[in-house]
Image (cartoon, rainbow, N blue to C red):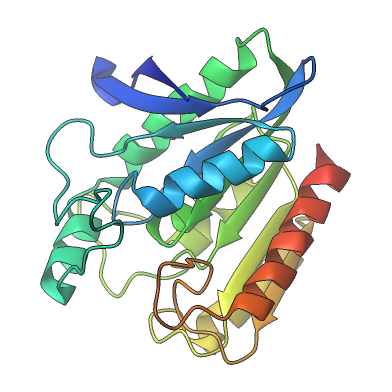
Length: 248
C-alpha cells in the first residue's frame, strides 16, 4: 500500500491509499473504492487488498480527510469499533454528496493518469454510504466502465443542502453497467426502494443487474460483523468479480 494525495472538492487535499497487484506486469484495470460510513477502516483495506489480489489497482480515498472520523476509528486492537446510531446518522448527514462525489472523481482521474492502469478499464465499488456514492459517481463521471453498489441508499427520507437530490433521480446520467446488491432484510433500504430503482433503470434503459440476497441485512459483506453470512457473501463476491471481468 502507498499513500496518494488527491486534489479533492474545492481544492482540498484528500488522502487516498493505493493498492496494486502483488505480482505481474501492468497495465491493470483500476477500481475507485468508496468506504462505508465508518471510514477507511479495516474492512475497506481488506477489500482493497482482496481486489488487488485479483489484478486490480485500487485507489481508496479517505472521505473524512478534512477532519476526524466522526466516530471511533478502526485500530489494530479494535478493527470494528461499535458506533452509536447517532454517530452513524451524524456521519452520513455531515458528508455532502457533491463533496464526496468530487473526491471520488479525483480518485478516478488519478487512476486514469496512473501508468499502471488502463484508463478505459476503471470501475467504482462502494459499500453502505460508499455504495450510494459509487452509484452517484457512475451517474456523473465519464471515466467509469462499471459500478458495483453494495447496499447504497436509494431514497433519502429528507432532502437538505448537502443532499439536495434523491439518488434515484440521478439514474438518467448513468453511462456504464451497474451491479446493485441489496439485503432482503435491510431495514434502511426497503424492498420498495430497490424495486423503484429497478423500475427507474428499466425506464431509462440503463444496463443493470439488481441482486437481492435472501435473509441478509445491511452491511452483510463485512466479515467483521457478528451476523456475517459467509456463504451468501462469498457468492455475491464471486458475482461481483464476474461482473467486473465482463465489463472492464
